[in-house]
Length: 320
Image (tube, rainbow, N blue to C red; front, side, top):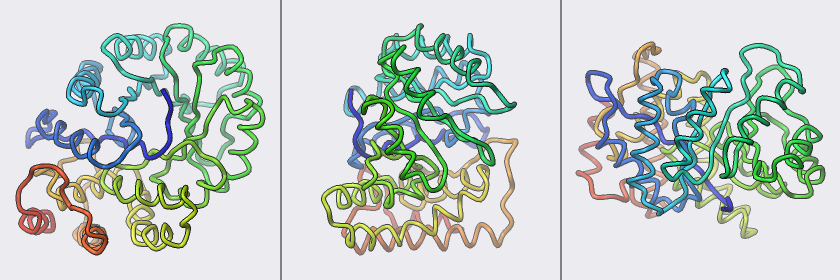
């Protein structure tokens, strides 16, 4: 398995009773498969994984593997502070056909490198598919190139690290050099740093699903040397990314409202405990999402590249 491009996180859609909406999840997966992506990933932070039970996490992984049916690789996220629980979910995902496993570094409390190495050593010893390590540590240091190189030497199927921090270009090159190219860097944080990092040699980007097709076009243009064209599209997407990532709970609202506006799903329900939107915040999210729709229209890209209802009707319902 190789990764080269946009790998959107699939959000978890809920019905009015805040139960997982399986049909809506299938629609999200169909959209992703038609968005020129390199793979899909779930259930991650952008999937509200921390509000899902273990059975629900298994449910969304199994549904994704079955419904995607090989159209794109499925990366199953198996986050847990307890290594045994992470291993159990990772093994389940591998057994049902996930192409790779992603695990976030437990950052609830400070952890030493030797303890973190043991945690990932146990996970990697328990699976045969490639592993993506996600490290997001606001205000603190993330994993070092030397740590990643040591782990890759011990487990060659540790293939990628997802980082979500500014000024990453030198880190990308340092990780490539330390691991002999064996560990690729995936950019997170909604794709905010995508354009600056393509030339640094990132393997891909894990943004939200809503603008994934636009980001895929930006990726292809930038990789092809058409930086000015890539920039002209990127500047239309970036304000929505920046605004939504002020908090994770705000992000869930912005992402789901965009997917409703595009006609992919019908409801933008965020599971409780959630942040309720103030009217002015909802209005601004819809303003930014309307700019995304206008950008799609200007590029002659479909708002809803899967069978769905009338875009304009659904977009007006999202705003109301």
